[in-house]
Length: 377
Image (cartoon, rainbow, N blue to C red; front, side):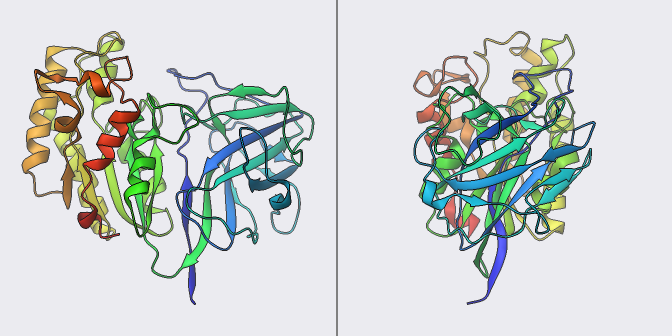
């Protein structure tokens, strides 16, 4: 059977030097970082992508290993496999650079927790990271990459230096990319349980899978927490191997975050132009595009989010999304999770408690709004 490399896991990264940080940046010296990566799809072989994209000095990885996860920081030792980079056990990634490991024969299936352990012997400086993946990473002193578990390790809610895992899958395997903000990354869902909206969507799929490129706080039009969507679309969607579809969820942060620093929200016209441009780029590249309506956030506890201008722009943009012919389909998340009595607010059943993010039930409901026939997976 002919096979091809496709994305089996993705996690979008940001700079530790950004002015707005929703989670604490980290750096490492002579430490092991162990990270749990839930595979969206599987294959007979895999290769790991590491990134020093936002580093300001070279990054040395002295040893890297992958294994199936058992529980928490514990690995299935009989699956423990060393990674190589051009045949070597170590690699130095230049500032701004990325590397892909040599392929290893370690069959994995969708839903497998793959554990990546990196030994970082030299001072790294602040790490390129995924800042709110609702998954725990473990940090231990010394080289513990091959250890069965890491008792006493420091636990943090971020991922570091990893951007993805590719798998060798049957030719014709197609991948959808969930491209958006915290409603994809999973903020508000129970950490470590894989109940993000993207996880719930993958449990609905019978063929193909969806990889998660959500960044909490990310915006369609403006940098600030990650590069804005139009700037990162090439890297985080079009360059994903196997990508055939893109699911889009943006807008809340364009309308809410500016108020936190006393600035006006994005206008409806600007957001409509941004969504239109994303659709144009996706279709030019041969991808289908499926867009969510902007969710309710009038009850957000965060300063500056509840402006009349931002809420009015949300309603206008949503009306446009629902009636536009720019997209291959629309999934009406806003309607599905809104409080019918107060449509600008989340339904209490789906509110994680901050008035803006979905809990486990809300993420499940969001996933249920996606038309699987439209995805053609």
